[in-house]
Amino acid sequence: MQISEALTNFRFRIAGCGAALPSVALTNETLAGELGVEEGWIMARCGIEQRFQSNLEETTLSLAVAASRKALEFDPSPDPDLLLCATFTPQYMLCPTAPAIARELGLPPIGAFDINAACSGAAIGFLTSINFLATGFARRVLLVCSDTPTKYLKQTDRNTRILMGDGAAAIVLETNDKCQSHILSWLWGSDGSGNMMFHVPGGGSALPPASLNGTDGEMTVSMDGRSLFRFAVEKGSEAIASLIEKAKLQVGDVDWVIVHQANQRIIQALIDRSGIGQDRWISNIGGVGNTVAASIPLALAHGMEQGVFQQGHKVLVLGFGAGLTWAGFLMQW
Image: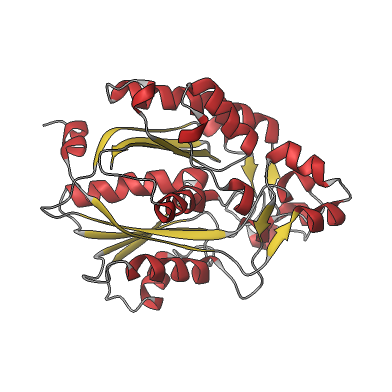
C-alpha cells in the first residue's frame, strides 16, 4: 500500500481542543494612536479590529500550557504519549519548547519536540501527528501551537504591528476502534527562495548574538508584505483547488474551510478565487489578529465551540507562510 493510501484509509478523532490568549487586547483605537494612523486605515489594510499582546510574564510556554490544559480537560485519560509544539517563537533559542510544556503539564517523559514551519506549523503538525498515529508510534498526540510574534516587532512598524497577535491553541488527536474522521487528501511544500520575506535578521547562525551591534532592526521582524500577499493568494488558491481535485470532490462538496488567518484581504481573495461560498469559511482574525502557528487551531476551536462540525462534514484546512512553506488537508469529520 502506498503512503498516501495508508494515510487516507486511517481513522482518528479530535479528542479535545483548547485556546489561550494574553490578558491584554490591543484595539485599533489604541494602536492607531500609537502609530499615528486612522482606525479606518488599519481595517482597510487587514480587517483586524483587535489583536492580543503578551506581557513579560506571558510567554510562548505559558500560553501553550494554558491551551493544552483546556484541550486535555475534554477527555483527560489516557495521557498523550507524544507532544508536538508548532512555534517559530520558542521559549529559548537553541532549545525546544515541547519538553518544557510536557513537564509543566506533569506528563511522564514522553516524546516531545518542536516544529518550526511558521504559519504552516499547525497544518504540518496535524499531518505529522496523523502519521505518528497511523504508523503506531503513538496512540494519543497533543499538538500545541503557540506563538508570541509581538515580542519581535519594531514598535514604530505599522505594517507588522497592525497584523500580528499572540496566542496558543492545542488539539488532542487519538486513534481507536470507534474513530470516524479521516484524511481525504493532503499536500505540503516549500520554496526557500522566499525565506527572507518574513524573518528576524539577527540572533540566528547567519548573524549570531555575539556579532550584533545593538541596532533595533537586527532583532525585530523584517517583512516584505506585498510579496507575501501575492504568494499567499496565488499558492493558497492553487492548493485549495488541488486538495479538492485530489479528494475527487467538487467545490460544492466542501462544508467548511479554515485557512491561516493572515490578513482578511488574503482570506477574501481566496474566497473569491475558490468559488466556495463565504458562509463556509471559518474566520476569527478580526478579534485575534495573525497568531502564526496558532491561527488555524484557534479558528478550529472557535468552530468547535459554535458546534458547526457534524459527522460527515468535509473540512478543508490550509496553512501558508514564512519560509516559504505551505501545507493543507481535506478531512471528513
